[in-house]
Length: 77
Image (cartoon, rainbow, N blue to C red; front, side, top):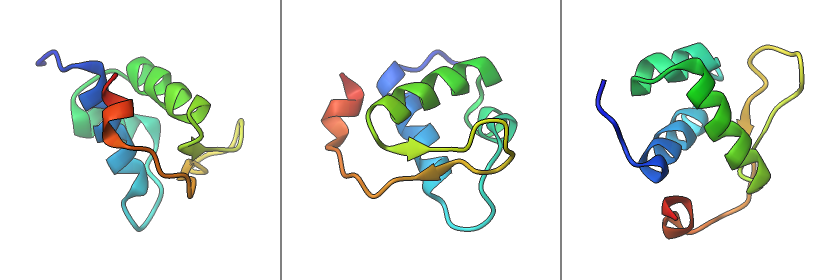
């Protein structure tokens, strides 16, 4: 497993969430980007605090992007 900068990982998580079709689980995102589920959760919480994603607590596959736009450079900081 290669160590990535946090901003790059957050962009990968956000891309996985924004893809059309069935909403991904945290495990699927973790496998896709090559990190642990806990790390995906931390990134998703950060993205939620930025207003970029939302989900229903205790419900499966409710992770979805919001309509908020944010420049990529903000994610990288």
